[in-house]
Image (tube, rainbow over all chains, first blue to last red; front, side, top):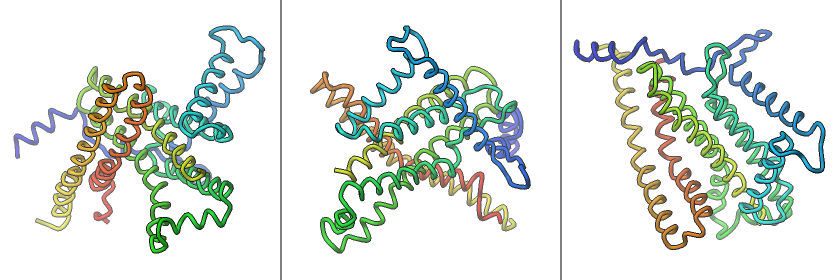
Length: 240
Length: 83
């Protein structure tokens, strides 16, 4: 046992403290507020300020490298994504899908902002509350657009397909969608946060930076994309 | 050995066992990537669509592995058995 204790002493610069991976909890008027909520507000502020700045003086022909040009590029690519993933005539879902992908991209990438101890920024999507709320919005969007597209009778009839006794399975399948959506994003981001926290306490320089490219940047962007793609797929299959 | 250390030891072993779930995710992702490479070889002009579909399938295949990871993290950092 002495050898293992020595190894652990050598490996970790300081004691591994599970609290280091947990969001900080503030007290506001007697209510606990996690730092994930504050980070969510910061991201909302960034996106709102960007939207305000880029649409302030709308021009017919914006200059190259202007903010309006960049915003138009983002809107254009989201419209193209919705067109290719959901089929034509689904442009009314562009605002929701665009909001989702922009918010998730910022939320998943905020972990690489330095000075986490200073600002207490914490990846909001590494909290089951955030991801489950997003998945619940998707769930409601899927079923409301399903009822709108097929009518309430057609919507209920779909649960009796292909055979009537499969109703319980169909209902469980419908409920499993938001659960798997939220747990996928939550597990990926929390895994990234925990692994990066452990790595930072083992080695101080270089290696965490390289690992961060995979666990924060690659996994974050991929999971934001996956969440929106699955949302679009669920809505498209429910509507068609 | 008192009860608490027994629970701690069993939780650590359980966290390791939960990560066996990674095998299934690995097989699924490897299969998706292999099929994706095959499809690009057949139709190089459709590479963008193929990569997008492959990433989606790989992420869905990853889900079960992520469930295992969540269980392992709960056992290690938020164990409900410690009371």
